Length: 453
Ligand code: ATP
Ligand code: MG
Image (cartoon, rainbow, N blue to C red; front, side, top):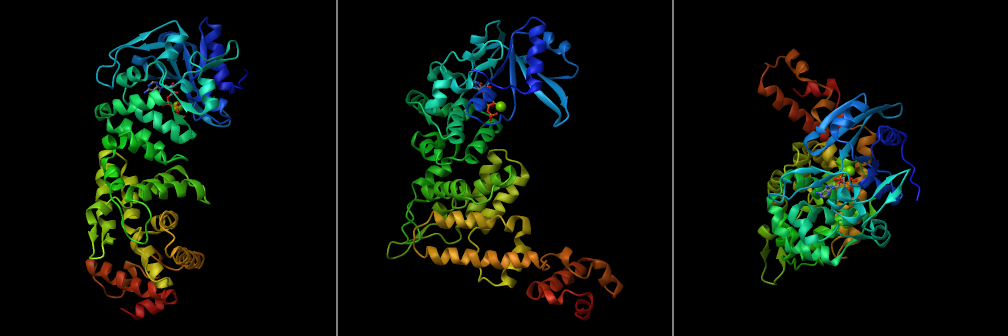
């Protein structure tokens, strides 16, 4: 079994071996290479202690020196400085509170280090001298597509409950299933997730919903995981819609909308955009249980749900300690997801102005995914509407129609020159002029606008 290691990784391993130590590439990078993927980062494990590692390299950072990790910084022409985490073989002592190992014990035995890792597919090591070290049959599980805890899953999830969420995260990223005993243990110990910090949960949860298989949320609902980390989804799963637009309950519709985005999106989004879209799809209807009314025919309506969803989305994202950019963008998308004015250029320019251009364009993939996760009722009409709005929007952008104050042909200074006193009335007047050009971009000339003041 031969793996091609990057030159920098080879360099670090050789350097440690030349100094008389063992060293291997380990964990996620070995898994990714065996899957034919490019690893995000390369981690190295060694029997050398941090104090033996540091003098061997010119630049190191004490990333987690108490836990045996130093980052070796290497320069290469292509990427500039890149960091490689080099961690001493260790046994994680007992975990105090589903969070922190009480103590970290170094060991000289690679097997002991692999034993502390979460899943068999993440517990393989490799170097050119020894080849693949795979004591827990991780390679076989990779081939079968199975996430399986290393050793006894109940013990492993008791030591660190975050592993429960990691199991679902890897299943969602890789399209794998989770081994039965591992699922049983996850379900049994799900409440320990309450002891895990919001930051750790959020990191895994974000990766999970941005993955190719957000449908993993169905499994997390059935095993009770969402009842602990996202009870709002459980409520949606228990809310039937009972109207002709919908086939599924609110929760199932939500997950299906995310799946549509994962499967059929024609564009590949950058990581930030993908995070905005997936979180917005997750939350877009979370206000429905609260906004629900039932008419005399037993049909259900959810008037004003987008505003309630906006509030709930903000609460959840604060709880998950998401950053402000994500919170603001996602809540804007949630708030406007159901806004469908008559498709005229004026209406679209107004919406672009009110919502902000960068957020506005993300509403297209959201509305399309939303529509495709509904019933067939009026589907053709709904999609035709999207197409028409997109066509008009594209024209507006290519013709560079003015849609915000910064596009206006006059500025505050122009108004002052024409007798306005500095102060709030200038802002008011500029907004008024903007309304004129939103309606008719041809009016956006200095001459015309100054004639209006
Ligand atoms: P990614 O590609 O997303 O970075 P990864 O497998 O590298 O995936 P990391 O969180 O970077 O995941 O962790 C690196 C390695 O450390 C894992 O492959 C695993 O062996 C081990 N590991 C990480 N977190 C845990 C944990 N909570 N419990 C046990 N082992 C863990
Ligand atoms: Mg990693």
